[in-house]
Image (cartoon, rainbow, N blue to C red; front, side, top):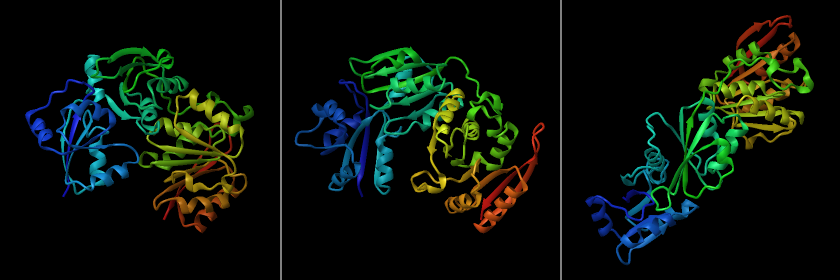
Length: 394
Protein backbone atom coordinates (compact mmCIF):
# COMPACT_ATOMS: atom_id res chain seq x y z
CA UNK A 1 0.00 0.00 0.00
CA UNK A 2 1.39 3.39 -1.04
CA UNK A 3 2.16 6.06 1.53
CA UNK A 4 2.04 9.79 0.85
CA UNK A 5 3.47 12.39 3.23
CA UNK A 6 2.16 15.77 2.05
CA UNK A 7 3.98 18.76 3.52
CA UNK A 8 2.56 22.25 3.26
CA UNK A 9 5.08 25.03 2.65
CA UNK A 10 5.01 28.77 1.98
CA UNK A 11 7.05 30.68 -0.60
CA UNK A 12 9.64 31.64 1.99
CA UNK A 13 13.24 30.70 1.15
CA UNK A 14 13.94 30.28 4.88
CA UNK A 15 11.60 27.49 5.86
CA UNK A 16 11.73 25.83 9.24
CA UNK A 17 10.22 22.41 9.89
CA UNK A 18 9.35 20.37 12.94
CA UNK A 19 11.75 17.64 14.02
CA UNK A 20 9.35 15.03 12.65
CA UNK A 21 9.34 16.61 9.19
CA UNK A 22 13.12 17.08 9.20
CA UNK A 23 13.62 13.37 9.94
CA UNK A 24 11.06 12.45 7.25
CA UNK A 25 12.88 14.52 4.59
CA UNK A 26 16.29 13.18 5.60
CA UNK A 27 15.26 9.51 5.34
CA UNK A 28 13.13 9.79 2.19
CA UNK A 29 14.17 9.16 -1.40
CA UNK A 30 11.22 10.17 -3.62
CA UNK A 31 9.86 13.71 -3.58
CA UNK A 32 7.28 15.55 -5.62
CA UNK A 33 5.75 18.99 -6.04
CA UNK A 34 5.43 21.88 -8.46
CA UNK A 35 8.42 23.53 -10.09
CA UNK A 36 8.24 26.41 -7.60
CA UNK A 37 8.27 23.94 -4.72
CA UNK A 38 11.36 22.26 -6.16
CA UNK A 39 13.19 25.61 -6.37
CA UNK A 40 12.42 26.24 -2.70
CA UNK A 41 13.27 22.74 -1.43
CA UNK A 42 16.11 21.59 -3.71
CA UNK A 43 18.92 22.51 -1.29
CA UNK A 44 17.26 20.61 1.57
CA UNK A 45 16.74 17.29 -0.23
CA UNK A 46 19.10 14.28 0.21
CA UNK A 47 21.62 13.67 -2.53
CA UNK A 48 20.55 11.34 -5.38
CA UNK A 49 16.89 11.72 -4.42
CA UNK A 50 14.18 11.45 -7.08
CA UNK A 51 11.93 14.42 -7.87
CA UNK A 52 8.61 14.07 -9.72
CA UNK A 53 7.20 17.34 -11.07
CA UNK A 54 3.47 17.85 -10.58
CA UNK A 55 2.26 19.05 -13.96
CA UNK A 56 -0.87 18.51 -16.03
CA UNK A 57 -2.09 16.05 -17.08
CA UNK A 58 -2.12 14.63 -13.57
CA UNK A 59 -2.69 11.09 -14.82
CA UNK A 60 0.91 11.07 -16.05
CA UNK A 61 2.11 12.17 -12.60
CA UNK A 62 0.23 9.34 -10.91
CA UNK A 63 1.68 6.87 -13.39
CA UNK A 64 5.12 7.94 -12.14
CA UNK A 65 3.97 7.59 -8.54
CA UNK A 66 2.97 3.98 -9.20
CA UNK A 67 6.65 2.98 -9.28
CA UNK A 68 7.25 3.96 -5.65
CA UNK A 69 5.96 2.81 -2.28
CA UNK A 70 6.54 6.01 -0.29
CA UNK A 71 6.42 9.56 -1.64
CA UNK A 72 6.92 12.92 0.04
CA UNK A 73 4.95 15.69 -1.64
CA UNK A 74 5.43 19.42 -1.10
CA UNK A 75 2.31 21.53 -1.58
CA UNK A 76 1.37 25.15 -1.00
CA UNK A 77 -0.04 26.01 2.41
CA UNK A 78 -2.60 23.56 3.73
CA UNK A 79 -2.72 20.50 1.41
CA UNK A 80 -6.36 19.92 2.39
CA UNK A 81 -7.41 23.48 1.42
CA UNK A 82 -8.22 23.12 -2.29
CA UNK A 83 -4.94 21.25 -2.23
CA UNK A 84 -3.12 18.23 -3.56
CA UNK A 85 -4.02 15.97 -0.65
CA UNK A 86 -7.61 15.98 -1.90
CA UNK A 87 -6.42 14.86 -5.34
CA UNK A 88 -4.37 12.00 -3.91
CA UNK A 89 -7.26 10.75 -1.77
CA UNK A 90 -9.64 10.95 -4.73
CA UNK A 91 -7.36 9.14 -7.17
CA UNK A 92 -5.85 6.64 -4.70
CA UNK A 93 -8.52 6.00 -2.04
CA UNK A 94 -6.57 3.03 -0.63
CA UNK A 95 -3.35 4.99 -0.12
CA UNK A 96 -2.14 6.01 3.34
CA UNK A 97 -2.01 9.81 3.50
CA UNK A 98 -0.47 11.96 6.20
CA UNK A 99 -0.63 15.75 6.04
CA UNK A 100 1.72 18.31 7.60
CA UNK A 101 -0.08 21.62 7.06
CA UNK A 102 1.14 25.18 6.95
CA UNK A 103 -0.99 28.31 6.78
CA UNK A 104 -2.83 28.55 3.49
CA UNK A 105 -2.36 31.72 1.44
CA UNK A 106 -5.69 33.25 2.43
CA UNK A 107 -4.87 32.79 6.09
CA UNK A 108 -1.49 34.44 5.52
CA UNK A 109 -3.17 37.34 3.72
CA UNK A 110 -5.72 37.80 6.52
CA UNK A 111 -2.88 37.82 9.07
CA UNK A 112 -0.90 40.38 7.08
CA UNK A 113 -3.98 42.60 6.83
CA UNK A 114 -4.89 42.08 10.52
CA UNK A 115 -8.28 40.89 9.34
CA UNK A 116 -10.36 38.50 11.49
CA UNK A 117 -11.35 35.77 9.05
CA UNK A 118 -13.51 33.31 11.01
CA UNK A 119 -16.59 34.24 8.93
CA UNK A 120 -14.80 34.38 5.59
CA UNK A 121 -16.32 32.48 2.66
CA UNK A 122 -13.41 30.78 0.93
CA UNK A 123 -13.43 29.81 -2.73
CA UNK A 124 -10.96 28.80 -5.41
CA UNK A 125 -10.89 30.11 -8.97
CA UNK A 126 -7.73 28.16 -9.77
CA UNK A 127 -8.62 26.23 -12.91
CA UNK A 128 -12.29 26.57 -11.98
CA UNK A 129 -15.28 28.49 -13.42
CA UNK A 130 -16.70 31.69 -11.95
CA UNK A 131 -19.60 29.95 -10.22
CA UNK A 132 -18.31 30.04 -6.63
CA UNK A 133 -17.47 33.74 -6.85
CA UNK A 134 -20.84 34.53 -8.45
CA UNK A 135 -22.66 32.66 -5.69
CA UNK A 136 -20.72 34.44 -2.93
CA UNK A 137 -21.32 37.88 -4.48
CA UNK A 138 -25.04 37.33 -5.02
CA UNK A 139 -25.33 36.02 -1.45
CA UNK A 140 -23.69 39.23 -0.22
CA UNK A 141 -21.01 37.53 1.88
CA UNK A 142 -19.21 39.91 4.24
CA UNK A 143 -15.76 38.48 3.44
CA UNK A 144 -14.83 36.43 0.38
CA UNK A 145 -11.37 34.90 0.14
CA UNK A 146 -10.39 33.65 -3.31
CA UNK A 147 -7.46 31.75 -4.75
CA UNK A 148 -6.56 32.91 -8.26
CA UNK A 149 -4.72 31.75 -11.36
CA UNK A 150 -3.26 33.32 -14.50
CA UNK A 151 -6.67 33.72 -16.12
CA UNK A 152 -8.81 34.62 -13.12
CA UNK A 153 -6.54 37.33 -11.77
CA UNK A 154 -7.42 40.05 -9.25
CA UNK A 155 -7.91 42.41 -12.22
CA UNK A 156 -10.30 40.06 -14.03
CA UNK A 157 -12.18 39.41 -10.77
CA UNK A 158 -12.54 43.17 -10.35
CA UNK A 159 -13.77 43.56 -13.94
CA UNK A 160 -16.47 40.94 -13.40
CA UNK A 161 -17.54 42.57 -10.14
CA UNK A 162 -17.72 45.99 -11.81
CA UNK A 163 -19.77 44.62 -14.72
CA UNK A 164 -22.44 43.22 -12.40
CA UNK A 165 -22.54 46.08 -9.93
CA UNK A 166 -20.48 44.68 -7.06
CA UNK A 167 -18.20 47.65 -6.49
CA UNK A 168 -19.47 47.58 -2.89
CA UNK A 169 -16.36 45.58 -1.93
CA UNK A 170 -12.76 46.56 -1.28
CA UNK A 171 -10.09 44.19 -2.55
CA UNK A 172 -7.13 43.15 -0.41
CA UNK A 173 -4.52 41.53 -2.67
CA UNK A 174 -1.49 39.60 -1.51
CA UNK A 175 1.29 39.09 -4.05
CA UNK A 176 4.06 36.51 -3.56
CA UNK A 177 3.21 35.99 0.10
CA UNK A 178 6.10 34.62 2.14
CA UNK A 179 8.61 35.77 -0.46
CA UNK A 180 11.03 38.65 0.01
CA UNK A 181 9.06 40.60 -2.62
CA UNK A 182 5.67 40.07 -1.01
CA UNK A 183 3.17 42.91 -1.26
CA UNK A 184 -0.13 43.37 0.55
CA UNK A 185 -2.35 46.29 -0.43
CA UNK A 186 -6.01 47.30 -0.53
CA UNK A 187 -7.79 48.63 -3.63
CA UNK A 188 -11.18 49.72 -4.81
CA UNK A 189 -12.70 47.51 -7.51
CA UNK A 190 -12.02 50.26 -10.06
CA UNK A 191 -8.37 50.54 -9.01
CA UNK A 192 -7.81 46.77 -9.15
CA UNK A 193 -9.18 46.57 -12.69
CA UNK A 194 -6.29 48.73 -13.94
CA UNK A 195 -3.42 46.94 -12.19
CA UNK A 196 -1.14 44.05 -13.09
CA UNK A 197 -0.53 41.74 -10.13
CA UNK A 198 2.48 39.46 -9.74
CA UNK A 199 1.91 35.73 -9.40
CA UNK A 200 1.23 33.93 -7.19
CA UNK A 201 -1.44 36.05 -5.55
CA UNK A 202 -4.72 35.76 -3.72
CA UNK A 203 -7.60 38.07 -2.88
CA UNK A 204 -9.88 38.89 0.03
CA UNK A 205 -13.00 40.88 -0.82
CA UNK A 206 -14.23 43.00 2.08
CA UNK A 207 -17.82 44.22 1.83
CA UNK A 208 -18.21 47.94 2.53
CA UNK A 209 -21.90 48.46 1.84
CA UNK A 210 -24.80 46.07 1.33
CA UNK A 211 -26.06 45.71 -2.24
CA UNK A 212 -29.81 45.24 -2.42
CA UNK A 213 -30.91 41.78 -3.50
CA UNK A 214 -34.54 42.12 -4.63
CA UNK A 215 -37.16 39.45 -4.12
CA UNK A 216 -40.00 39.84 -6.58
CA UNK A 217 -38.80 42.35 -9.19
CA UNK A 218 -41.53 44.55 -10.71
CA UNK A 219 -41.90 44.07 -14.46
CA UNK A 220 -41.26 47.73 -15.26
CA UNK A 221 -37.72 47.48 -13.88
CA UNK A 222 -36.68 45.02 -16.59
CA UNK A 223 -35.56 45.95 -20.08
CA UNK A 224 -38.43 44.60 -22.18
CA UNK A 225 -38.60 43.07 -25.66
CA UNK A 226 -39.51 46.04 -27.88
CA UNK A 227 -41.03 47.64 -24.79
CA UNK A 228 -43.85 45.09 -24.77
CA UNK A 229 -45.05 44.62 -21.19
CA UNK A 230 -47.01 41.48 -22.10
CA UNK A 231 -43.80 39.66 -23.06
CA UNK A 232 -42.67 39.15 -19.48
CA UNK A 233 -43.84 36.77 -16.78
CA UNK A 234 -45.64 38.90 -14.22
CA UNK A 235 -43.96 39.10 -10.84
CA UNK A 236 -46.53 37.13 -8.78
CA UNK A 237 -46.71 34.41 -11.44
CA UNK A 238 -42.90 34.35 -11.65
CA UNK A 239 -42.52 33.80 -7.91
CA UNK A 240 -45.24 31.13 -7.91
CA UNK A 241 -43.48 29.32 -10.77
CA UNK A 242 -40.16 29.35 -8.92
CA UNK A 243 -41.85 28.03 -5.80
CA UNK A 244 -43.33 25.08 -7.69
CA UNK A 245 -39.96 24.29 -9.28
CA UNK A 246 -38.65 23.51 -5.75
CA UNK A 247 -35.33 25.16 -6.59
CA UNK A 248 -33.76 25.00 -3.14
CA UNK A 249 -33.37 21.27 -3.68
CA UNK A 250 -32.30 21.45 -7.35
CA UNK A 251 -28.92 21.93 -8.97
CA UNK A 252 -29.59 22.74 -12.65
CA UNK A 253 -32.51 24.74 -14.00
CA UNK A 254 -33.39 25.27 -17.66
CA UNK A 255 -35.44 28.30 -18.65
CA UNK A 256 -36.83 27.56 -22.12
CA UNK A 257 -38.04 30.63 -23.97
CA UNK A 258 -36.60 33.20 -21.54
CA UNK A 259 -37.42 36.40 -23.52
CA UNK A 260 -36.40 39.13 -21.00
CA UNK A 261 -34.67 36.68 -18.65
CA UNK A 262 -36.91 37.58 -15.70
CA UNK A 263 -37.47 33.99 -14.50
CA UNK A 264 -33.77 33.06 -14.78
CA UNK A 265 -32.68 36.24 -13.00
CA UNK A 266 -35.19 35.90 -10.20
CA UNK A 267 -34.19 32.24 -9.75
CA UNK A 268 -30.46 32.99 -9.64
CA UNK A 269 -30.88 35.84 -7.16
CA UNK A 270 -32.84 33.66 -4.73
CA UNK A 271 -30.96 30.40 -5.35
CA UNK A 272 -27.41 31.42 -6.36
CA UNK A 273 -26.16 27.82 -6.11
CA UNK A 274 -28.11 26.94 -9.26
CA UNK A 275 -26.58 26.33 -12.66
CA UNK A 276 -29.04 28.05 -14.98
CA UNK A 277 -29.16 27.52 -18.73
CA UNK A 278 -31.56 29.90 -20.49
CA UNK A 279 -32.77 29.24 -24.06
CA UNK A 280 -34.34 31.78 -26.41
CA UNK A 281 -35.06 31.62 -30.14
CA UNK A 282 -34.90 35.37 -30.78
CA UNK A 283 -31.48 36.96 -31.15
CA UNK A 284 -32.78 40.01 -29.27
CA UNK A 285 -32.83 37.82 -26.15
CA UNK A 286 -29.03 37.85 -25.97
CA UNK A 287 -28.82 41.57 -25.28
CA UNK A 288 -31.90 41.53 -23.06
CA UNK A 289 -30.37 38.87 -20.82
CA UNK A 290 -27.05 40.71 -20.64
CA UNK A 291 -28.69 44.04 -19.85
CA UNK A 292 -31.07 42.66 -17.24
CA UNK A 293 -28.60 40.31 -15.54
CA UNK A 294 -26.12 43.18 -15.13
CA UNK A 295 -28.84 45.51 -13.95
CA UNK A 296 -29.81 43.17 -11.12
CA UNK A 297 -26.33 41.88 -10.23
CA UNK A 298 -26.86 38.40 -11.57
CA UNK A 299 -23.74 36.84 -13.14
CA UNK A 300 -23.46 33.20 -14.14
CA UNK A 301 -26.52 32.53 -16.32
CA UNK A 302 -25.65 30.61 -19.49
CA UNK A 303 -27.51 32.14 -22.44
CA UNK A 304 -28.24 30.01 -25.51
CA UNK A 305 -29.78 31.53 -28.66
CA UNK A 306 -31.45 29.36 -31.31
CA UNK A 307 -34.32 26.98 -31.94
CA UNK A 308 -34.55 24.74 -28.88
CA UNK A 309 -36.00 21.86 -30.89
CA UNK A 310 -33.00 21.83 -33.26
CA UNK A 311 -30.32 22.00 -30.57
CA UNK A 312 -28.05 19.17 -29.42
CA UNK A 313 -28.73 19.47 -25.70
CA UNK A 314 -26.19 16.90 -24.47
CA UNK A 315 -23.45 19.54 -24.19
CA UNK A 316 -25.34 21.38 -21.43
CA UNK A 317 -25.61 20.30 -17.80
CA UNK A 318 -28.72 18.14 -17.52
CA UNK A 319 -31.64 19.78 -15.68
CA UNK A 320 -33.53 18.61 -12.64
CA UNK A 321 -35.93 21.56 -13.01
CA UNK A 322 -37.31 23.10 -16.20
CA UNK A 323 -39.48 26.17 -16.72
CA UNK A 324 -41.15 26.61 -20.11
CA UNK A 325 -41.74 30.30 -20.69
CA UNK A 326 -42.31 30.18 -24.44
CA UNK A 327 -43.01 27.37 -26.87
CA UNK A 328 -43.94 28.91 -30.23
CA UNK A 329 -46.90 26.60 -30.67
CA UNK A 330 -44.75 23.48 -30.26
CA UNK A 331 -45.37 22.67 -26.63
CA UNK A 332 -45.85 18.95 -27.20
CA UNK A 333 -42.61 18.60 -29.19
CA UNK A 334 -40.74 20.59 -26.56
CA UNK A 335 -41.92 18.41 -23.68
CA UNK A 336 -41.12 15.29 -25.69
CA UNK A 337 -37.53 16.52 -25.98
CA UNK A 338 -37.24 17.61 -22.34
CA UNK A 339 -38.86 14.63 -20.59
CA UNK A 340 -36.09 12.05 -21.24
CA UNK A 341 -33.49 14.47 -19.84
CA UNK A 342 -35.19 14.93 -16.48
CA UNK A 343 -34.23 12.59 -13.63
CA UNK A 344 -36.90 10.78 -11.67
CA UNK A 345 -38.45 13.40 -9.41
CA UNK A 346 -37.40 16.25 -11.72
CA UNK A 347 -39.87 19.13 -12.05
CA UNK A 348 -41.41 20.83 -15.08
CA UNK A 349 -43.46 24.03 -14.70
CA UNK A 350 -45.53 25.84 -17.32
CA UNK A 351 -47.84 28.84 -17.22
CA UNK A 352 -50.97 28.36 -19.30
CA UNK A 353 -52.94 31.38 -20.52
CA UNK A 354 -55.67 29.35 -22.26
CA UNK A 355 -57.64 26.15 -21.92
CA UNK A 356 -56.07 24.89 -25.13
CA UNK A 357 -52.46 25.29 -23.91
CA UNK A 358 -53.37 23.66 -20.62
CA UNK A 359 -54.84 20.67 -22.46
CA UNK A 360 -51.72 20.44 -24.64
CA UNK A 361 -49.49 20.45 -21.56
CA UNK A 362 -51.51 17.79 -19.74
CA UNK A 363 -51.56 15.52 -22.80
CA UNK A 364 -47.83 15.97 -23.45
CA UNK A 365 -46.77 15.15 -19.89
CA UNK A 366 -49.03 12.10 -19.84
CA UNK A 367 -47.55 10.89 -23.14
CA UNK A 368 -43.98 11.32 -21.85
CA UNK A 369 -44.06 9.74 -18.40
CA UNK A 370 -44.64 12.81 -16.25
CA UNK A 371 -47.36 13.27 -13.66
CA UNK A 372 -49.37 16.43 -13.10
CA UNK A 373 -48.83 17.22 -9.44
CA UNK A 374 -50.25 20.69 -8.89
CA UNK A 375 -52.28 23.40 -10.65
CA UNK A 376 -52.72 26.90 -9.22
CA UNK A 377 -54.82 29.59 -10.89
CA UNK A 378 -53.73 33.17 -10.38
CA UNK A 379 -55.20 36.45 -11.61
CA UNK A 380 -52.96 39.52 -11.61
CA UNK A 381 -54.68 42.92 -11.79
CA UNK A 382 -56.90 43.06 -14.86
CA UNK A 383 -55.08 40.32 -16.75
CA UNK A 384 -56.68 37.02 -17.68
CA UNK A 385 -56.31 34.16 -15.17
CA UNK A 386 -53.16 32.07 -15.55
CA UNK A 387 -52.85 28.41 -14.60
CA UNK A 388 -49.40 27.46 -13.28
CA UNK A 389 -48.95 23.72 -13.76
CA UNK A 390 -46.30 21.56 -12.10
CA UNK A 391 -45.37 18.12 -13.43
CA UNK A 392 -43.00 15.55 -11.91
CA UNK A 393 -40.95 12.90 -13.71
CA UNK A 394 -42.12 9.47 -12.56
